[in-house]
Image 1 (cartoon, protein in one colour):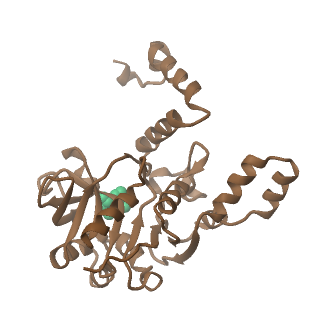
Image 2 (cartoon, protein in one colour):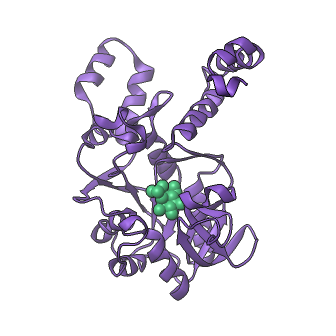
Image 3 (cartoon, helix red, strand yellow):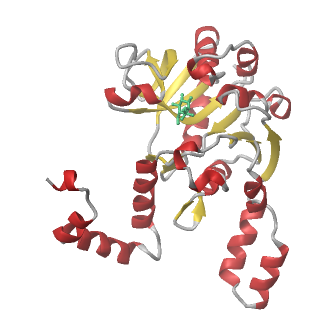
Length: 304
Ligand code: G1P
């Protein structure tokens, strides 16, 4: 069993962000901020903290703001320097120095599997990470680092797994686990099954470590659920032929690609924020304790 170092991460960012229209009519959904950082910042930071040195963004039309975000901004840096704003200047410079980022365009939106396959030549013959930036994961040890450790022990591809409720299985890739251990072998996976079809309540969170063999399976994957080339369908073949592991990671996960998930993430990050948490906590207490204020924000139906 050959264990190789994981140096590269693929981050697909070509999605339209229809769930956040009209905001995403003129800005990429990955640039929506959780407090003062765009969603994409957290995924890149997680990858870098895990030891990734090269990031491959699979991008598309209307995503140029992402490239600008991770580039130097000489005018802004010059202005901040002149104004003596050292702290924010350092933060701005650090963003562009975070990692080596390469951009590939996904010319047609044919699905997540199709997006990942775009990275084949740049990744080459080595294991790599995939991070879906909508999935925000806050934990002491970065989630993708946790998966890398499972890869380090098993030499197999690894998926991040979490429990969901039976009503939500049809929104995700669902895992058929071989055991109920923390680290487990996967029998199979199925993309967005009905409640009846779902083999478990364990779903794939957007963090993956892949053996480069995944590319061969992606190449032969036909459009599946929703007419899209699904990465889950290629994982199904990978699991049957090469073996794939699942891992119930440690950390707090929010689906920031969903409006309610985005709101929850904002509250959670606000409560942990170095400068804001005290005042924000007080504000939330006031809102919860002050019933009329809470009710004022509710619809008539919810008030009943
Ligand atoms: C994608 C994957 C799905 C996975 C999910 C995690 O779905 O296809 O298997 O569970 O990400 O966020 P999407 O959210 O793009 O519909």
